[in-house]
Image: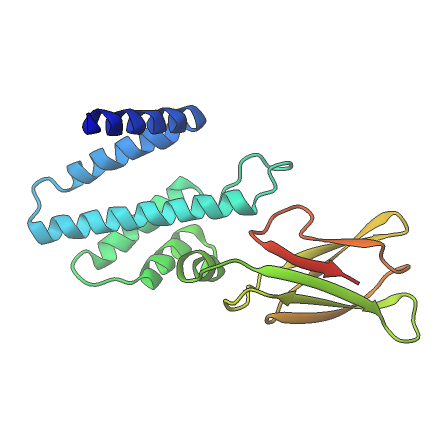
Length: 220
């Protein structure tokens, strides 16, 4: 009875996932088949090595997809790409061939993917592979003494983890019009001086929702 109950729950979960994303189910099936096929005719240690590479590659791929999904403005771009499958698998193959008979690190994988894609992946790996948590932004501003158009803007990161260095767009509402600036964090507290036509009535942090974040507070 317990087995039937578990089978029913598993079937329901698979059915829901398939309705939401059929490719997810087919990807899981293909991944299992690929792991079995790749291990044929190999010794125990070689089979473990190949399976470890496949598992790591799939995990990195999923992290990349999650990162893309969370950082994409879906109102403007329904589907985003970090770099194509050709560059990904080219880098993965180079990584495997270079370290098939020795030890390898995550930095070796990053270097192989950078070479195949032509992109700098330092920030991506720092955030999505090595890092943890997410930024909690608190924004404040005030007019500089003796000026009605110069404002000092302070962006603080309140999370217990180390600072995130992604550029942050701030949108101020001034006289009914939106005025955007970009702050480039240098640490957990960044101060910028800006020029505005008048005192802002309101402000938004990351108005296009391109960052994985939490808003801790916004106040003048």
